[in-house]
Length: 185
Image (cartoon, rainbow, N blue to C red; front, side, top):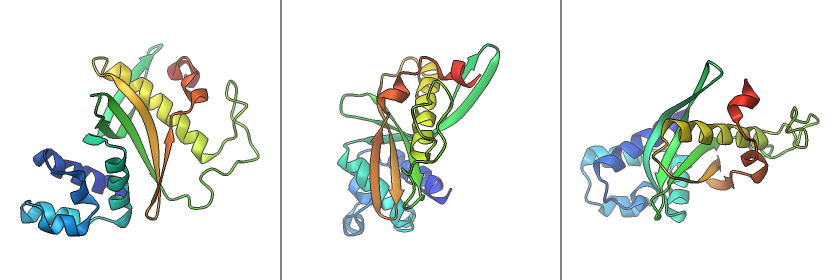
C-alpha cells in the first residue's frame, strides 16, 4: 500500500512539472541538481527503494505516467464490477499503457501451485503470476469500456522485488478470453 501511495504522490509531482525527466525519481544525484521546489524534492527524496526502481523501469521503457488509481467499471447482465488501474502511462505513439504494480512475493511469484484454474483456463496453474494476468486482462476490458476514446497499447505487470523490477506483458492466453464480464458473472 505504501508503494501505491508513493506512486500516486510522485505522479502528482510529475503532473505539476510535466517537462521534468523521469530520472529525477530514481537518480538522487540528478534530483539534487534538478530545478524543482523544495516540497517536490522532499516528496521524491522520501520514497522507498522499490518506488525508485519502479520509476527507473518506466524510464527504461520510455513510458510517461499520467494518472494513478484510475477507476474503471463495466456492466454485464445488470451487474457492475469495478477496479482501479495502478498507473496509466502514455508511450511515444500516444497509446495508453496500463501498468499494474505488484510487490513482494519474493521467491514464489511464478511458482506453480498444485491446483489448476477453473474452465476455460484449466490449462493454467493458480499461481500469483497467472492470477495477476487475469486481473490485468479484466482491468484492460474495463478500461476500454470506461474510456472508449483511448487507444490502449501494451498492458503490463511490473513486479517489484526489492530493487529488481520484472516486466510481464499481458499473455496471449489471457487476451483470448472474449469477455471477462461473462466469465466472472
